[in-house]
Each structure stands twice: as C-alpha cells, then as structure tokens.
Figure: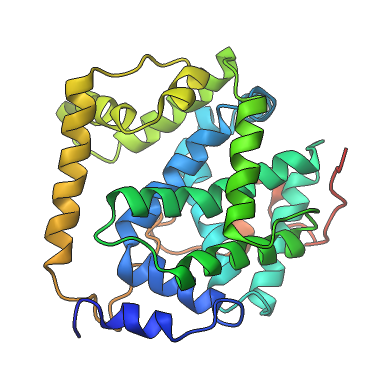
Length: 292
C-alpha cells in the first residue's frame, strides 16, 4: 500500500456520512501517535480554566487514579466511535458518560469547550507536527464527530463546522484562561502519569520536553514558566524529524490498526469499568445536564 493511497481513499469519502470511518483511519492508521498527542494537549487545555480544574481537583481522581482517569477518557472516545455513532455501543457509552457527569453542576459552555478541544487539538497538532497536514475531508469529519458527540450527550449549541469549533475554543480561552493553584495541581498529576510511561532517568527530560511544545497562554494558565528558546526549538525539530521519518515508511496495513492499549486494563475492560468506582454496576440511565 502506497504512503498516500489511504489519503486518496479518504478524499473520496463523505465527511458527514463517513465521519466515524474517517476518524478511525486518521487515529488508527494515518496519525495514531500524533492524534494521541493532540488529544493529550486537549486534556491539558482543560486545566487552564479554573472552573474546570477546581472541579477536577476536588474529585482527586487524577491524584489518586491518574492513569485510570487518562485511560478512561481515551476509551470513552474509542467506544463512542468504534461501531459508528448510531450504534448501540455508542449510545451505551454516551449514557454511561452522561450519568458520570450528571453528578456535577457543569455549565453547558464548559462541555462545549471540552468538546472543542478534542476537535481542534488533534488538527492543530497534526498540521504542525504530522507527516502531512489533514485534508479537507478529515477536518470536516472531525467537526462532524464533535457535532454528533454533542447531540448524543445533550450538549447544546455545538458548531456545525471546524471553523466554528476553532472560533469557540479561541474565544472561550481568551475569556476563561487564568491561573489557579488547582490548575497546576491537576496538570502536575497528569504530567506524572505521562512521565511514568518512560524509564525513571528520562522522566525529568520528558517533562521539560513536553512543556517546550506548549503555547505560552496555556503555560501561564497552568503556572509553568516558558521554556528556553533553545529547548523549544530543539523539541520542535525532534518531533518534526520523527514525522519526516514516518513519511518515508509504508502505510500501516489494514490488518494492523493502532488501538488503545490502556495500562489500567491489561486483561481487557467492559464499559462498566470506565469511570469512578461509584459509577460502576449501576443502571445506565442518562441524567440531565446543567445548561446554566
């Protein structure tokens, strides 16, 4: 399979009709590593908003169960799209997710922002660091995925285009980004989870490297200093060098998708395993969501 053959396949698809399949091709074949990095940065952006990070800090989920919390977030996204957004599997995941969130008073605009980070984050990362930029069909599919997830979860006012999601994200961050000690605590807990994936001697370097790839408004909101210019330049060159190498490789074969490998569930998981302990083994009934 040629390196650009899957891109030609995607360009022949309809983003509205085939959004789940396009998302799978992007996240499991074309850009598996880059897509995960974009989602990871999306997680961090959420912590730049005190109203969000204070709630996360209060639950102590990241401090006590950081790896599971990270895995569960990735797996919920996988469950929603694995068999298409109209499947019973996706509806069950949405009901479970709504019931978890329904315990808290979360404004609709915060749900919209978190959703926007999962649409905009992967595209911005891939366009900056991927082995090729996203095509128009992939970009439109990301927006359609966001719109469908909003509908499934009862989130009101989701944009219909990628540009709408991007404008929503930028306007919200301009208004809501601010430093709070809770931001730093939740971000530190998340960095500890990510650093633990690497050998102990490399962890301080991994943390500095990660910070060097973040934009300054986010760093300020999280309470981290801007990294030295030489380190930022070195980090960017390193990631782009990886992408140049990936561009020379053959396309990932159809029989070898890159699927989530959650460290918290080495022997597999069921939908009921996802989320806090209090959410398990209970009827999966959706709860109303705050819109104030």
